[in-house]
Structure formats: structure tokens, C-alpha cells
Image (cartoon, one colour):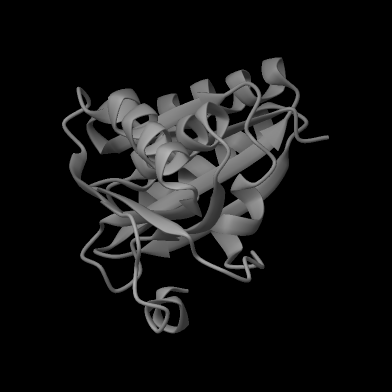
Length: 183
């Protein structure tokens, strides 16, 4: 059951593998993702009940060492649309207004996406994680202009003080051909 998700973003691959192992040994959790990302970071995402996810993240953090943790989160009640957006499996037929949040960390982008989609009636298009982007991550969403503005505000407010927020954008009426290249 995915009642909570937790993530550790690690500075290097070897420590990342160690962290993944420690997290799996610490609690009864589901491994969602354990993979290297640009530029040589490693991301481990797990799901399960809140206590198990908290235990796994604590154990992973301890195994990797604070100096190796780039960013992390525990979302006790992650929005269900996060998972399809992470895998690029969303099916939005029409982009209305387009919202974009860009961050310097994978964890911050997912936290921003969760806050955005919980705050307004928007569809997540994609949460693109650090592959070929120098370690950055991008969240794209669509909906009515007012909803997208509210979602972008909520997402950026959630991460702006972390030091990982880079930029955001709302396009009220994006060109129809832009939909073909977004995700």
C-alpha cells in the first residue's frame, strides 16, 4: 500500500546503492525507484505505511551520511497522480494553460508537484527527473489558468526556501504544437 512515499537523493552512486540496501533492510516497504541520475547522483524512492517509510528514510540517511544527502522527503499522503507523472504515463488530451516548476533537486520537484496538484484542479503532465538535465528536475501541469496559477504558487511556495527552487512559468494559452514536445 502506498500511503506514504519517501525519497533520498544521494551525491554519488556507490553511497546511493548502500542507502537503498539500508532502506530495504530497515522496514517493510516497496521499492519504487533506485537508480543513478545526472550528474552522478543516485535516487531511492520507497512507499509504504508512514512509520515504515520514516524508518527506511532514517536508516538510509544514517547509512549514507548527512554529507552525502543532497535532498530528501517523506510525503505521508502523496497525491495519486504523482506516480504516473514520474513514469511519463499520463494521458492528458488537451493542454489548457501550462504550468512549469524547475528545481535543482529531484526531491524538491516531487514535493512541489505534490503541493501543486493538492492545491488546485490541475493535471500533472510529467515530473521529469534529472536525466540529461544536469541534475535538475521539471514539473509540468495543465488546467484552467486560475487553477494553474494557484498550483504553481502552492508548489513554488512549498520549495522556495529550500535553496533548490530555480524557476516557474505559467503559459495561459500555449501553442497547440507545444503539446507534442512536452512529454
